[in-house]
Image (tube, rainbow, N blue to C red; front, side, top):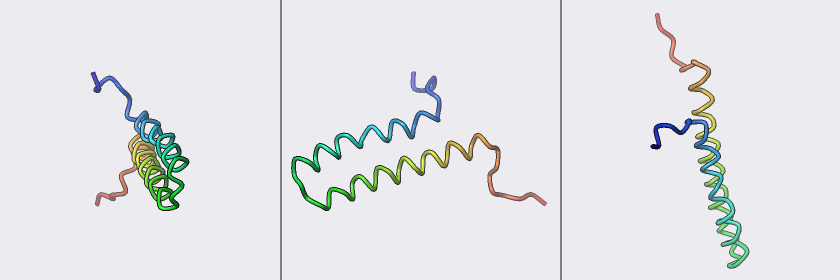
Length: 64
């Protein structure tokens, strides 16, 4: 079932955590909760980077 989903959907799924982080931040008001939002953005950005690099065919390795 999960094999049918495209890998490019992973960053979008990762961003689904942002609303819950925002609600938690608004309910508690603690500034350290912003770190959770930064972590979500870092994870989504990393997934986006991996997915776009996979599609381009560039792997960063040179063959002699």
